[in-house]
Amino acid sequence: MKYKIKKLRKYPSSEIDWNKGVYLGMSMNNKMFDSKETICQMVKIIPNHVKQIAVLVGDYLDRYNEQIFNGCSEAEAINKSLEKGIKLTSLFEKAVSNCEDIPSYNFIYSKQFSERDNYKKKLKKFANFYATHNEFHKLVDYTIDVFLRRRRDEIKVKREEAHRLCKYYLFEELVIFEMLAEDNLRINIYPGNQLPIIKKIAAGELAGISESLEKLHAIEIKFRPV
Image 1: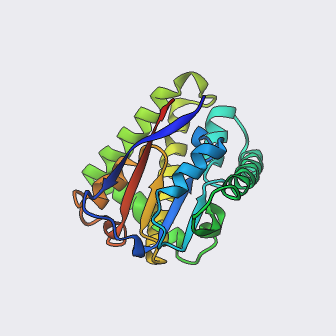
Image 2: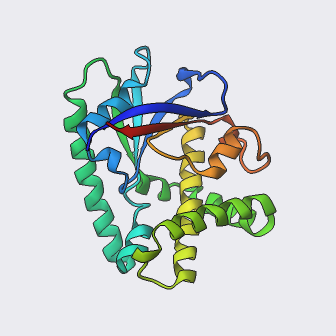
């Protein structure tokens, strides 16, 4: 099946300042990254004056999905997820080699962020918000419930364990987005739904969680089959 971009949604809805630093989020289970055609379409939404973007590879993050849906041990899950990352980055390279008038790019891997000195401190911050901030807690639980309900027949661990793993996936993802914003990469493009928490923070509807994420511009690329 082929796909074509139907529309873009942005949070906040204001005009995008493309000079704020751009990155494209690549998740391991998003079928839009399986096609050279859709990859080219993603990259081509970026204006010509943008000369460099980053591609965030969510390979290490995907270890949580491998544990939940394939019942893998953590070590096995890490290996499988990193292998997925190698395949998808290779496909991305081949796809964009045939695209004209696109920016240069570099891959940033999710594992890199866990090696930073302030990673654990930031992870603890979001865990504390989950424990103390009612709206943040509700948004995390809502995101997890929707995700697990959609894939309930695939879950290979107990529901409580699946919820715990999803929760730490989200916390890690927020840490990564926050670090990228602090690295002056503040335009987050994703082919699909952005996290409800990210949309709320970027739109100015959830203050006090992260000043860095409040500067984010989150863009959803919506595809339709043709």
